[in-house]
Length: 483
Image (cartoon, rainbow, N blue to C red; front, top):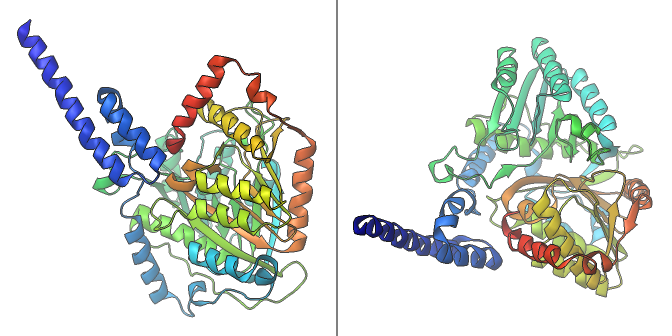
């Protein structure tokens, strides 16, 4: 009996020693003070419960991707004739007039890409319009296709995509298909094998390619990108699954938004894919980066766009700073739609300051939940937002998944980033900011229709919640650094 107690005591002591070591690591390397405190306290107090989760979820810096990015950039520059878009200065004029020179300068430095004129951007509302446009574009491909999604399911929509890609590969079109290994964890091997057997270059984006990342489940490539022949590209919130077409009760009908981009900004979007592909394969896809042509100023092609990629390998917290800058730029209104409302302190402070400036600040969130803990945390953040004067709306018909930012009457951003810590610091994301009053009007009309189908909430949503539910909201918020 003494022998067993001695062993148990030794194991408990060892767990606490390892917990202290891990807590020191968390304090040194966790990006936010809230996250560092949460990890440190739990690792010291309950190491036997938190040590293993910390191994998988504790890191906030993605090692190796920045090195892969530098290599890919150098190889692309050496191969490109004429030079690709990264040698072009940002477009002057309209973005500066609408947003101010400081914002234009900060966004181009933040994302490492310029504002480019001469684009045409259109919204694709919901899954039917989005995938109809994507499949039509795939069918038109003559030279190459790039396809990247966070989630790919082996269901009816997934089968349609697989068949379309196989058909193009058999026609001699070069097809590159990238999916996230965590988001698409249940994608069967037979699906991937069928694509590869038909000549489709197919790879997962796996975070454990380098030894230092071997245990990490926290980093996901959340981007959704389709590009065809360098002529048009698609970015937004949709993944590949029937739920995105509204085929999964009780979340249906599914509310989401994609955009189709034509023009020089397509090269920027393709470059983001190229970086991810190089990380996954250590190779560059065999297609020419299209040069940025001069704007033709034809009707509908005068839009200025900047592509803002972000991820945990960035030196700066690009995604969070993008939202801060967009909110700070607003003089009349800032409308944001997001499925998850878990902002960090910087973004929440920017929202509160916008209210104090007299800006119309609105956030549209779902009334239905797809993640229980995130939804509970979002309720508490919604209450805090209401107290700060921010108007919060809940979309009623179904689950809201779109990621849209409308700035005044001048600009709108659409992409894959949510208003939460996971997008800010843990996911690879992409947003496309378009400066054009006609496009902003199109986005405004879309959002007004959404607000018409929404319910503006007040403080009673929180106050009428029972004591146990309130406690659960506060507990859920403790996990916000990793939600």
